[in-house]
Length: 96
Image 1 (spheres, rainbow, N blue to C red):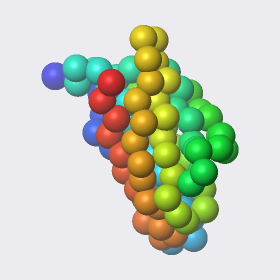
Image 2 (image 1 turned 180 degrees about the vertical axis):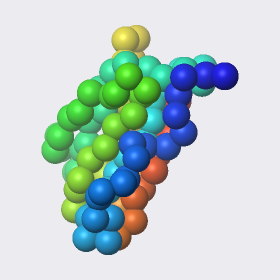
Image 3 (image 1 turned 90 degrees about the vertical axis):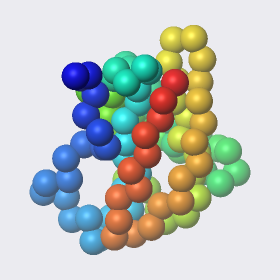
Image 4 (image 1 turned 120 degrees about the vertical axis):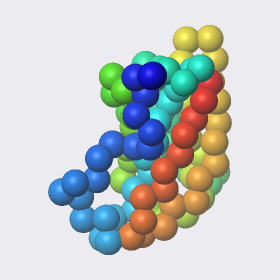
């Protein structure tokens, strides 16, 4: 069994109804990957960056809209587009 937990961090205690949440996990061959995930706006401009947790998870609180997640890991990067809506967590799995 791999050490990667499916999905993003636990949402216990988070007011999901009032937030726009983009979260998920970063893995390679089913195992969690240490790295960074950048949040880029619709024009490709840098907005934020977070390190992944020990289980490869990450989370952003953002405005509703279309965003790009850029996973930065040793050996390269991977982009994923996500549409985020207030009141729901957009859960993205990124395999590198």
